[in-house]
Length: 396
Image (cartoon, rainbow, N blue to C red):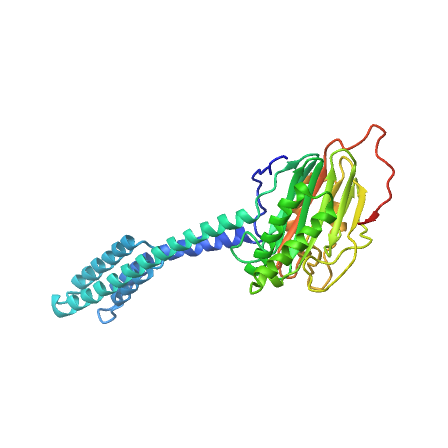
């Protein structure tokens, strides 16, 4: 059985991330300059005004401000500059060494020491946060590994955005595997957000990784997903993840036939593009979501639709389909894909992300995932493409 290939692909940048990064850099630069600005302005004001106006008292703010952005050593140096300028201004005014200058220098020394301690504590806290962030990123990457750009006879292009701040993984999940006779794909969305949603997603991903190689068909995979969540709920009933249900879309692309088989467990229907024609796949009988707390005894239905060389299929979560503008209108996905039919596949995820961010009344507020599957292999028998119906439901 082929190993699970992994090739690093670029994730789409978060909406507004570049602007936010620039603003953060600007605030940091201003914070670095501010202590020196205080020293210069306080000194000028003290020199240019009458001796009764004591602007040198503002110099005490310089080391306190430096502690927010400078290292402990840098904060101490800025404090030393403030103390030197205070002594110089006192000398220019002809102040006595005792008690005026001595009292000011003692006060400044106390402030500088406090600022140095504060700066050191900030640096240590920032180092701990960086370490925690690195561990969290590694853990999240282990849950959702990057997709390879190509598997078997299909190319894969991914848009993935987690709604949680500073998160790389949310309640949306995806996986594509090359199996013996084709490619199997899962894309889904866990109810809710936060760590319980991530936990449920990791459970389903692990179950799919195991089932995709051995299950005879898509219904068998769906049954194993359901069984995995049921076992977890029995083993850890106190976990919030045990109460979550998930919508799932399973796909299978055989190497030797120009078709794609789809099984939806309550998930939005994908969209197929053939040339300039774009339309949603007609799902005749979607199954219920995985681990839905409602007893349902119904067969799984597999939809088989034509999928030949050059065809594209877009699988997506409700972060795409349920995005609304300020008037409440839903995002016109089919119309957009029709307009982008001549665009290369590599461009579609980025175009979609930018357009969703512009269209949404508040940008991208939900986890957003879209996986573009492009047929670019043989899969066509000698007689050419078969004449298949638009959708053929196969209950299992």
